[in-house]
Amino acid sequence: MTTKTTNKGVYWGYHTELEVTTSKRSLIFSDNNPIGYGGKIDFTAPFNTDGSVNYITITLYNLSKDHLDAVRNKMTFTLKSGPEDLFGLLTEGTIIQREEEQRDNLDYPLKLKCLSGKDYSKTAAIYSYSSTVEAKKKSFTIKKGEVVSYNKKKRKKVRLSFKKNTKASTIIKRVCRQANIKLAHMWLKKDKVFTSSYTVSSKPYNELKKLAKACGSKLYYRRDGLVMDDFSKADPYKEHIYVTSVNGLLNEPVLNDDDEGGQTYTLTMPLDPRVDAGSVIEVKSDTLTGFVRVINGQHSSEDYTTECEVKRID
Image (tube, rainbow, N blue to C red):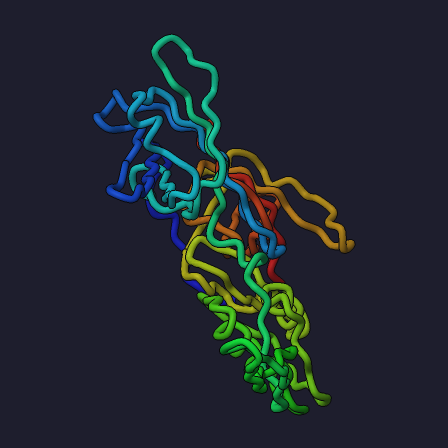
């Protein structure tokens, strides 16, 4: 495998920043502004490649009553964290639940449950229209004893279908366009050709997951959007992450057995915002040396750590 990796930066000088966008302005909460006097911010930010949505928990401390009241459900948020040289975006999305915790002296802690990205699984059903037209007889009375009748025509909704020998990529692009779903990247291991006519299910996100699987790929969320990934690219997201036992690993990788009878490793490292679902990392340690792909994991403000499950790239 040929790719460029680096161990840019050092793992110190950590801080966190949460930006919440209200209808009138943006509020920025920081644990480092002014330096040494910022409010405390706790968070856990999970990520995965199984296509399920991720929910982020964020707790803010040392808020004023005005700021506490300003943060509401359905507002958008951006969460950034990391060491001084690698500080960057962890995730962004929407606040879906807020809970004011018990007051501690003059402090008003606020716990937020947030949706990372967008939940496309709830996207409205998609349809096409048949060439036939339904005619329904309608009538109305214009005055006593005089009724006007007419036929009202309506095109019939049908499931979206494609003729035989259509490529999966064509279907994927049409589903995305009609359901207003944006793919940040699309890499298919094979662009399957359907030798029979193909009818799309009414749930577009589930259909995209099925098509991705048929093409030897996975559909999942990253901080830059929804992706289809065949896991064959050397370093598809160009993050250039390199960790060793001396710099970047907090302990030796732990070997696991996965559900499919294969093997994965658990990596624990200082929080690195470059690491996300699908990231490629070059590891050099006593128990694991080589390139791995991130399957799932989470960033946490507790001791500022990133823990992830990875699979070796052959």
